[in-house]
Image (cartoon, rainbow, N blue to C red):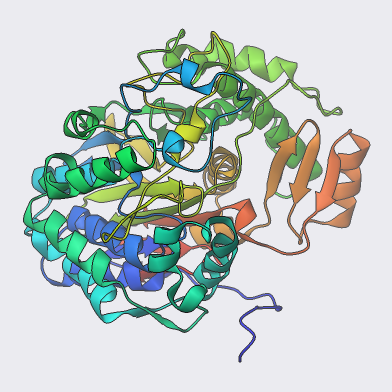
Length: 529
């Protein structure tokens, strides 16, 4: 058996093309490119890629995922929130005597929204028939695909967590174990489910045969998800939030997602002295800005209907300047920021020669999510309900019909040219609380210091782990680490560069096409033509 670890440093090169797709799994990227080759646009490519990812990277997303998207179309940026709401029958009293939200089982499940995103994007902005977009994923499921190395590692970890769940084991652990890197995995259940979703434009999942199977499983296993909960689901078009950063506009989805944390940090950083990207001064200021941002989001972000503050107030220039004054250049602080647990996610970016661009993210939250697999369907249900809190009085307290705090965030960058807004870049960095931290670090390198997208993704990253603790990837100058420690940061150097520091993808607009970059921390690639 071959050793599928990679002990030596390597350098990926960016991909240039008039049409480009970048994502975390090569077969999914090729599914998106095939839509462009058949006359589709960036939305067609993005949707086909997203659907394929549910099959070829099930350790991070699935048919039962949630999704968000930012879309540039004909001179305007659109935001799509396709996260699901909790069952209406869910109440805080259900968790009396429990100290934190469950992470496994039906109590962690909210209505999955990814399918609604695929259908909505395709029908409003796509060019190809919806059913065509499902064909690569159905083929991967029915004929099988060779499992990629990082997916195999995550699958093996999942076997220990979910292996005692009979339907999970039956479907995802053939022969009693997780498939290894390079082994073939196929799923007739997933193929048939995707065919049914395609043939009904998603209606079966929310109001038909698949909905019945989901509700029956919930009832049999003590869940409260109802047919009405599924039927009432709708994704929402929303106005993205943005801040100015080094002459560019960085856009994120508004709450219930944590994208505003990246914007707060970048807004604070605009008021702080600019330094070279790998200096101790730059890293210190970025870390301190992110702590303040995470402290804000942990206190305030929730379902927009439950929030007690207008998110725009957190991006007010005077508010950001006041935050910047709290940063001490020579001392690490602890403003009491909150961190959610680590999670698994897939992200993709796409751009076509007509100028349409898509930034899209979907996730089960933690690996295969709740561990609930609907019998005979291959549908792994997300565990987004774990994003609620049980703290009385908090806007994100668990309740019926609410969207929970969400970690997954697509990003987008524009610029003003002669008072006309132009698209610059679709980008994302996956990985639970690492996501806003990764967004801020990548944007600082590209917008603030002019690094190319691949270099910005390749650079070593830091990750806050609580208090003054910072986990830093290998590759940072030891003198810089000593300087940071002298300022009070509690530095730990990770043994290797891994996905715990996020996995990013970028598609950036050039004069005559795009450059695509894909993070070496994931199995993915950028492809183009």
